[in-house]
Image 1 (cartoon, chains in turn yellow, red):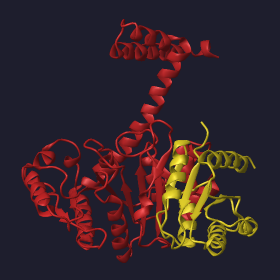
Image 2 (cartoon, rainbow over the protein chains, first blue to last red):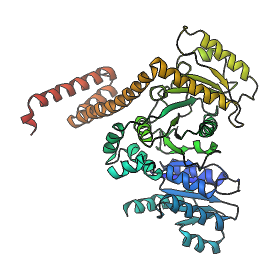
Image 3 (cartoon, chains in turn orange, purple):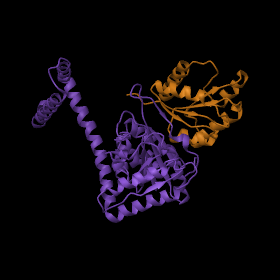
Image 4 (spheres, rainbow over the protein chains, first blue to last red):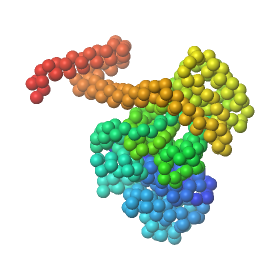
Length: 137
Length: 325
């Protein structure tokens, strides 16, 4: 049996809108994955701790506040610190992210950014494919 | 695996997290890990927390962790939520209520999906508890899925069971029923700031007074997990019950229960899987199912037949080993 894919759906920072996060969490669940939902208003440090303790393959961050430029690199920095240097999880970002901000996020270690209008099928498919690649490597 | 085990003993967080996944998945190497873990028994106090969905178990866990930490005790939490019977997926939402101690170095939190196991926990519970024990936590809190009336597996694994209720969930008859109300060592009426808390408490007290006298009389405590009200008293009750177990010899029996429960899990897995595999290979399973569909058999007879065929086959092969080679 293939190992279960575990995903942390995280809400960093002060933004309190979690409808998007819940829709994505539900889509992952329906695709047979185990989803840990962080709850609202988490700090980058808290999210990194959760990712480590839950031994997830994916950290999916939902941000609608515009603070992605600050929060996402901090989450990645804490993830690396907790794991002793290497980033061994797939980091995805969803929410309202201006196009011009995407290169910087990817440079920081984000694998993919999903903006408004992305279908849940696309997110699930991307996640499944890339987790398999990551595990195989 | 040896290196991973040593890291767990030293309290390495990622190592413990990884090991739990391996054991959950039954991955290669997990057997060795579990073997080593049971031979290095920890000394953790195991507290089970159960109750219906929405009574505030997760918030209470957050409050208890905070209370135990302020007493200087290290705490691990194992929180179970249900897996979908259709897709095998799960939403594990027990962390949402964790507000205190979220980055405390002496706290570990892990969510587990039930993965089809009934009874309120997951099949790997016994092994996971043993691994966490190796890491040396003073206390392990085990939070069950939102329990109905008969999810009572937690009593097999915990030293102390907290049964959590909130006001307004039915009348005194509910408390008379068999099942979850029989397994509490401590009863907690959470959300005690809501109307009806005193009534719920009184009904529980009445139920408990009908027990035969002697032994441990479970206390009934009122808490408001979100404000911390009643939590010091709850920590005190957990302590008192543990002391009672130690002095009465009950602790030994509970630890023994836990091993028996794990043993049962493995036996079921080995025997049931084995019988089904053999029956499937011989075509007997197919014949049984066809007979059931045709209304010419019943599950009880079919199961006895499969079991005795399996026994006959395995005793033959034991007597004549040369035939197998």
